[in-house]
Structures are given as structure tokens and as C-alpha cells.
Length: 569
Ligand code: ISL
Image (cartoon, rainbow, N blue to C red):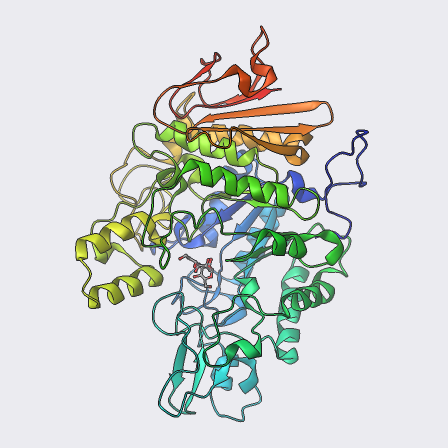
């Protein structure tokens, strides 16, 4: 977080408009989902000790920042996104001492550590909620969103929770309903309450004082609950009017007085528009450094549900990312991701997880990392991990998947069709253990993993990928990350999409002053003949110098299946 940070493209004269681009414009973030990263004590669940043992892997990869999904004390109803104590580590993952040791080691290796901040809701077991629900006149009653039902027994509003069923749960003892946008075990906090906000700011300050380097903020655009929208019949909202006010206050109370620290903030924002994102991330507004937007990961969802899965089409996919590139070119900043712990594995979703898995995984990485913004690598993507391939409902663990499955089954849907939908869209696809090595526990655990290792690919391990000379996904990521570090055109260059209507070629340029790059990617399993009219550099007698490729032998005008090539232009 810096206050003078919005990086501007070069002016026509070639002189940068602003003194120094923010440090995170050339940084790459790696997301650890701790449960499935590495288990050090044999209980089958990943932990802080496991992360400490594997820091060398991340250092070799060259990432700048590690973001940890929640490790706070939690009943684990939603894998840690239901927090019962913001100031402690869940015993599943370790202790505060383990955390301090991890943080010191991360810093000693020259990396930064970012925590997940989940403050749209708490766990129902958080002492704040226990007190809030204890009586109608509890001093903390107003810290959560309570409403009366209708006289006819109807719910306060018709909102549905993201995890199936109504978004309101009746508290029998006090006779009122509380709002939960996610599980019933995740009551929403009331951000209208200033005392509650001050407690959240104090908690954030304690973590920054402890040494963490910033926050990834869970569904942070949901925190502003506009009281008017909570009336019966009102449409579902995601962003109340006070959202910018809350984020500016948080910036003032937590970040603004630490100008000497290199911090980073990224807000997760389902439903955010490009125009909103500019307001959230413009440096002069003092809100956030960047946001996770959801447009490109919603393109294959049906109108009512993500489980109503559609094929991903290249033309709208690249158009969507290009729109965000254009929208945040002058003000604000993009974060770049194709996968995380809520999304299917990117190579299975956007690529080919069969015959051309290596090429497709490296193509997707190349295209993403050559966009303008801060790239996020989700654990396992650096070896091209694929979807889980589960065949039975008993293998699933995720509350969203299990609730949806139970609801649809009760409604009479075809059980096989439900399993097929989960196979493509369940969040568990990205939550299987990282396979460090071969064998029963896949080098992840000496015990029984809490969730099955992804099916059918015993050969796909970190060890094997890193050893496979010339075809290592990890090595390809390493090159891309190094390229961003050493090459300002990758970090800051202007973006222009080429051939927007081509449904197999993903091509664009990046330009900064005299430097130019041309990115060419064949998003198909068939060879692709480049048209020299695409770009002047393809019309020269000498073909342009290759900067990165996933098919080293190939330099002519034909791109092989899933070939990606970055050339000087
Ligand atoms: O997973 C999703 C798609 O089905 C999203 O709707 C997701 O629930 C949304 O992106 C919010 O995600 C975040 O908050 C949730 C938590 O379950 C997710 O893991 C987290 O990333 C509630 O805290």
C-alpha cells in the first residue's frame, strides 16, 4: 500500500508521469491454501510446519509474496473462512509461535506474507456473536444483522445464501433472524456499527505490528449493508452505499500511518464492475491496491448457478480480460488470476488436462503473466495440477458442494448429472493435496489425507515435474516470474488485444517506450497458421527473437497445439 502509487503508462514523450511505480507492479503472489499444502505432523491436514518445510520450493519459483488462506482459530465449517478468534492460530495448523517462526523465515528469504482477512462475517462461535445472540438488549446485539420475520412467518427478505437455502436463520431464543450470506455458521457482521469497525481495525493493526505484509480481504464489497436494502422485497445487494467510506476509513486507521512499510491489499469482490474497480484501486482515493474481479470466471456459469456449466469460449474470455486491461490502464491496477481455492483447476477449465496438459498449463500461465497487473499463482498450478476427478459424493468435503448436492437431490435431480456438475465445478477440484512425491500420501502427509489426492495421475508430482527436463511447468513459471522482475514492459507496458474475433488465437502486444512484446498463443489442439498481417514483426525477413516459449523448437509461422510464444516486437 503506497499513497503515490498508481503506475501510469509512459507519456508520448517517453518520460514516466509518476516517480516510482508501486513495488507490487512487478511482484508475483503465490496463494497457499494451508489445509492441502503440506502436512508436517501426520494428521492428514496441511499445517504451518509443512509450509515452513516447503519454503524452498516457493523461493526457487521466485515469488515475492505468499498469501495464506485463513489459519485463524475456526470450527472449520467453511474451511477456515468462519473465524472464531482473529488473534489465534487454529490448533489444526499450529501455534502463534509456529506462525512467528514462519513469518521470520519468509522474510529471511526475501518474501512477504499476506493474511486473509475475513470480516464480512465471523463464525457463529465467535464470542462477539455468542454475546450478540444472547439477548435482544445485548451490548453487541447491533454488531450483527438482526431482523424480525413477517407476522405471517415469512423471512425478513427473500435473499438466498451463496451456500444454498435462505440467507436468514432464526435464533429461537430471541425470536429474530440473523443474516448469513454464506453458511448458517457464518453470521454477517453489521458494518453500520462503529464500535465493531474499530475492533476490526485494531485487530488488523495487531497483525501488521506482528510483521505481516498486508491482507487479502474476503468478499470485502459485501460488508456495506445498506439498511434500506434489508427491507422486505428489496433486491439482493452486494455493495451498499457506504462501501467506499468503510474502505477509506480502514485505510486511514490501519495503513495510512505506515508509509515506511511495503504493504499490499487486495479486495475480493464478486460482482465488481470495471468502473467500480477504478474507484476501489485508484491510488489517490486511499482504498485498496487491487481487487479480484469475477467476470472471466463467471463466463461458463448458467444464469442461475455456476453448477449449470457452459463451455468456455475463447472470444468472450479474451475480450473480458482485455476490457479490464483497458479500464484500469490509466487509474487503478489489476490483479490477474485464473484459479484459486474456489475455482476449478485452470488447466482443466480453460485448457486441456489430457494429451496437451503441459502445453496448455504453460500457455495459460504465459498469457496470464503477460497481462498488465499483479499475477496470483494458486498452489499446484505451478506443476499443472488438474481437477480432482472424484466419482462419489463421499469424496467431497466442501460445504458449498455438499449443500448444493443435497438441495438438488431433494428436488429430484438426476444423481449422475449432479456428480458430473461437481466434477467440473466443485471447489474441491482445487483443494486436493499438493502431490509433492509419489506413494500413498503423495509426499503431502505420512497419514491419511483429509481429502483424496486427485485421481488418476500418479505421475504428476512436484518432484517429477521439476525433474522433467524441457517439459517442467514449474520451470516455465519460474521464467515468467523472472521476466516480470527484470522487464518493465511486462510489468507496466500498455496492452493491446489483436485478432479479437479469432476463436483459436490469443494474441496481444505490450509496449513501453521503444520496447515491445508480441504474445501469441494457440488455444487449440490443432496446429495454427499465423497470418503475417497480424503484426508487422511477423512480416520481417528475420523472425523476431523469442523471449519465452513452451515449444522451443518451433519458430516459424505455425504454432503447434497449445503453443505459446512471446517475441520481441
Ligand atoms: O465460491 C464461489 C463460487 O461458488 C464464490 O461464490 C465464493 O463463495 C465467493 O467468491 C466468496 O468467497 C470467499 O468467501 C467465502 C469462502 O467460502 C470462500 O472460500 C472465499 O474465497 C465465504 O467466506
